[in-house]
Image 1 (cartoon, rainbow, N blue to C red):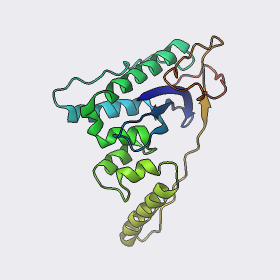
Image 2: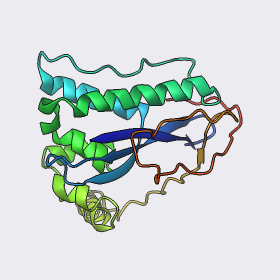
Image 3: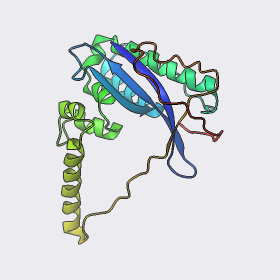
Length: 213
């Protein structure tokens, strides 16, 4: 089982809020996982959420540690970026080598679906129109989106019957992400666990804008 954390990207939500997410690549032959190979993007705060979920189910087991939150974290600092990615990779490696933790469906949805943490929680509790297996197997298809749209329409219809208004409109968020690989040194050996055929995107530099978690 091999896991890799790579390709940090800066996302600008608006003028004042930015965050960084990372690509998680998983390659496994374990029967515990529905997909042998998968790739998703997660941000640091989602890793924190995952550890809290696992902690609630682990009882007295001591869980692997995440890289500590750094109030001075800066994407333009190559050391910060590399150290965080290495820490997140080590956290996932330790989790994946702990059999008891592999029974948590939220871990599987975190690693192999594109659901956000709220939807992962709902799906794990059986409160979505799709199952955990469907969320994973069809994560890159329009199937899940169609089910969520139907669920949203049903919810809007129920609310409009009492308010007198029709379906609410929601402006889709724009993805203004920027790929970043620090420095000309190129010391980002973050995918040594994977085949050399998996290459990171072409490096792009970003300015020194501060980023949040």
